[in-house]
Image 1 (cartoon, rainbow, N blue to C red):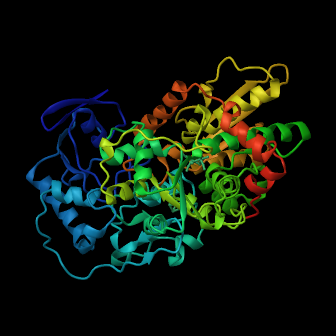
Image 2: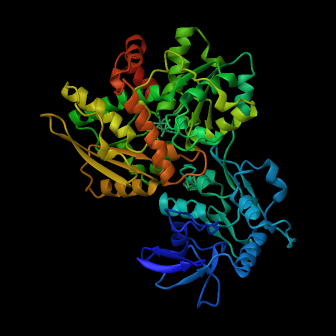
Image 3: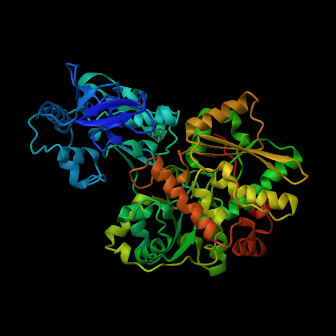
Length: 570
Ligand code: HC1
Ligand code: SF4
């Protein structure tokens, strides 16, 4: 350990730590703006400047390494002046008239910093840099005028997602963060994963809101409006209402959406169970009949967009299953419409998702299996919270609500879809039992859980050989697996890939902030619910059995083929 002194306190830190990390360990908070924990220090904004004795210039704490005997001061008049000056300069080029109408109002890191540093007036006025609004993509809006050039989005997109859709362009006063040649995100190889939104400290990156369209549908007496919510939403929505990360608020969420005026409330978890039925059988069929292996999951639309842009030659590896919420949309407008006699033309399906790419997915031409747009609108978890607030609902005071039949019953396997490794674990529970005809003794495949970037497991199939599987989350890890497939060194049968690091629990539409601790807490909530449920395997879900008996026939049958499967051709 290295021993140093910070603000008069003796502090110990592992060699190689930065001053910022050492200070944090000693409960000394140094303000930051461009700093992205768990990814990479950028050292661009100079907000974390500190005095290091023996150094003439102030030093950025986020990149300056500790050394034995070092003496640091984090709160001197010179430090405070420098930080204040830096933030004032940023604020002077920021459209402050927009604060009240900005979706990040009260959650903006620049606002918070200006307050913490006691900035009560901006001494610098004059020309502001030009800011364009890019709202062409169905998922993400980029408001250049609010960008503070911290580069956090650029770093996440390049280093974590391995996409590099946005970069720093131009110089000096004309410096901008945007796609090359000033193109729209809609026109470049962007996965629409929204990880850049989670990284943005201000309101320069946001989801494309669909709240008004959904209100209009709800208040249109000719429309029958159905809502479904993704597994990961219930593990994070509570954070928008002051609950600690990892609090499951399923019951309150259900009451809230009913009060908003939705006519029926179904569960994407049910459709996750259905996906397992279809995908599990597809895997066993490919293995038996010599189909394309490894088969890769297809429920994460950011991941689909990534493979289409960067590895189109590997598209035959994708499972042909549509994602669960799209399956649900197709079923609502066929199975449920027929059961109730409601004209699917009068139905509006709204999906509440932790994901921004799902907004793009629902508008893809492949997603009209019912003969209509299967899912009409996707709202992020954050947008649902905004609607609940707009409606004046006292979330904490709500009683627990319930899902509607016949598309609301779910197993623990469906629940864990929301965490990295969850789809794989759910699939293994079903595939192993279907293949061997025997009941699994241990349902928990812990080797595929957790935040390690790439996880592998070998699962014995009781006399029928073994299944080799892998799980990757974050598109940078996906790229590593795809390279292995290309060079022939990936001996897997089945791979789960999710676009977002941590899986859907930390999708681009989830409440802020997101970090590894929060990822773990949200995932833990889902695994706990799985453990608490009696029903833990998709193929044992009675409503799924009824759906096959009444409507679909069998997994991979004619109806499933038409409604629940597709092929992406890039
Ligand atoms: Fe997901 Fe999925 S798990 S993709 O991450 O397969 O968004 O939560 O809804 O559709 O079920 C997201 C989550 C979600 C789908 C399911
Ligand atoms: Fe990069 Fe994802 Fe943002 Fe696109 S949405 S710019 S891929 S981080």
